[in-house]
Image 1: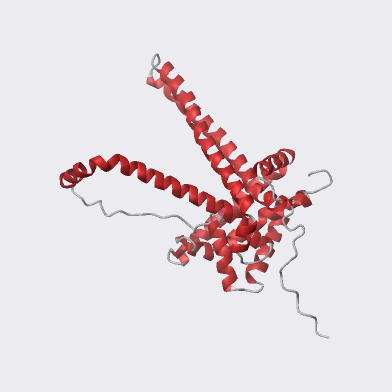
Image 2: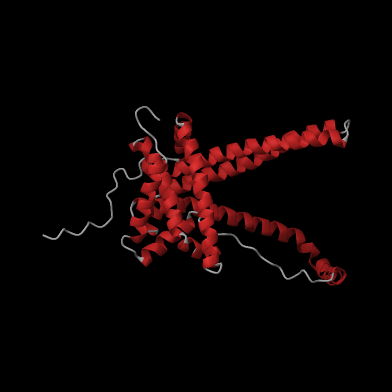
Length: 309
């Protein structure tokens, strides 16, 4: 409840489901489906599952393999450090690239849902400023999180190592377990809260065409002022994610694991992804026109046919 405004949970989901059917099935267009699927793919919906690689090295004899690899290792030893550094730099560059594409893709996918269209190039150019701002914000947050985790780990490990010298292992084990449990719970709560803010930053930036930091403070204030409504949103979203996971598993089995392939799985499960994203957009619009992504947008759905006279 926000003044006289009633914030609902089930109604936005029903609206999101109806919106999904209008976008993808009324009328059905395979080209539009593939385009929106690519937008969802760019936004981070890679497939219906993950990858499991089975390396055929299990039957090697340990002594024989060690003997065969020793000359090769000696030959490549001078290049080992440059290869590790180069591989790490390449892997880091890939992570940054995918994060940038995901930031830009979030606005493209949102635009496809809001305007009921399959378009990539148009929203890619139109929301370049907002997408880059969101990417830089996410990158800074990720670095800050890594530094914070390292500092907290040092703050826990160093005192434990100092006091553990004068205490037995049996006395220190419960303390270590308790500290890590408390740290894990605190970090989980913070991660959920921060993920909630960043999730709703997209529609706020889409509507206001503002920078990421401005959207961050705006969404944070909105969550603090309407904590109960967002808690219900999180609980209901958990149920939706469980249901989506079950649908993903069924789709994976029904398609003989084709649904786990990148982009292919996105296209197969596109109704799920569109419905979930539309649910968030329909939910936040209840807090006022300043959060309504459809404010000022001319609907692109086809006009109904005239009634027979």
